[in-house]
Length: 355
Ligand SMILES: [Zn+2]
Picture 1: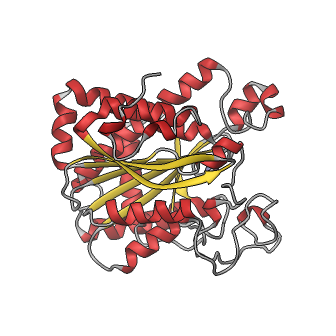
Picture 2: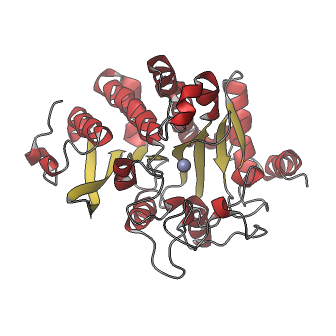
């Protein structure tokens, strides 16, 4: 593994090498990126006498109003395939950036921002929550409606020893969650049109592409744009694998970070559009094909067989490329006449919110 030269970064990378393979890969990619992007040390967590960095990257134009594509992963420490999928795409993207004029061109007018490993301590400990036992995806100050008090997976405040623990009521968000939110506010909120994807794995047998809300079955404000984007994806890639839907069509949760950020962005009441998605890669399919995996805690959330891992790492490149194009070309899905938008809204209500 090639080490990043410490002087080319705003922090000493040797402090963090050898802790997680995903971080080591990120450091290698940072050398490929060179001066084509910026690296930010957003925070550091100490755990088990080790230091874990929270690192953000920004690539492309410095104009923060420009179209922006955000990619995030590793919120849940067990789902390391999410970070690996992100890093695989970043590797392709950075190599294209070395020689492909189109990619170089795109970045003159677009921003690509990322946090590849949001919960490095959880990943190190091989558990879903962070080092304090808090599920970061239940940790935002967002209360779900119509959720059963017995729905533990929706978030609870009973004990950090149980999964899906939200943290102590009315306390500040965990550092990882706060860093993520601040980064998104700083790097995404000023964009006229931004799409973000937070990559997860674990639920079901399908790859699901979820938009808000997680907290309620009520429609979010931008269902027309969500359907516009889905329609464009269906037309452009008719054989794609994604089930596009509001997350609450599957289950409702408290404390979803993207619900929180979406509502914060909406409260600014400008004409900017921010669509945060979660890609939930269906890992039950991997288990079905390799039942031995069910007996390994990592295996439940990550493809184990080499060919299946490779397939997963290349599986989502089209989707990310599509979204990078979509933020630059809103004319056919987001910036459309209001009559068309109304029609899309009605169709979206029929499609996703029937009951
Ligand atoms: Zn997850």
